[in-house]
Amino acid sequence: WEVSSTPHAGDLISAKGSPFGGTEPGHIAFVEEVEQGDQYGGWRIRISETNYDSSATKTGTWSGSYNSWNTRYLSKSQLSKQLAKGAKPFIAAKAWKR
Image 1: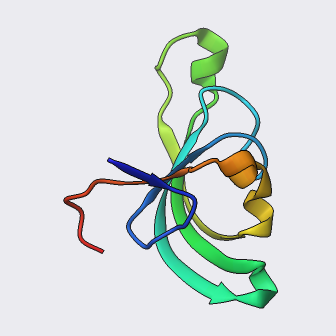
Image 2: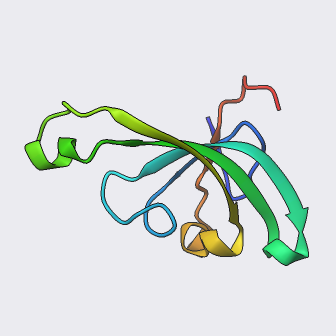
Image 3: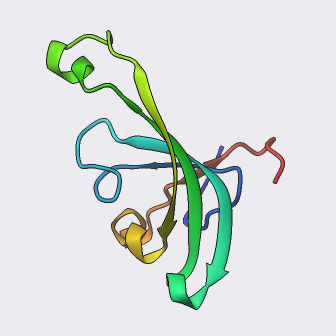
């Protein structure tokens, strides 16, 4: 596995806190696309993500379901917390093709 502070299409991003929500255990999303541009603070990513039904946290069981699928764009500046202090939230397997 490789971790990086630079996104590539096909990476996963593992993070918590805004803009992903602030609760444990965190969030995983798939990086679909990376667009370069000064207007984004350097780049923005288009991610795909899903969310687990909150009933799981209320009951303490995993009886809920994945109830939504979403794609959205996030800019480098929106991910400043996740990239602070040299953090590397982007994950890729060496065998994955880019």
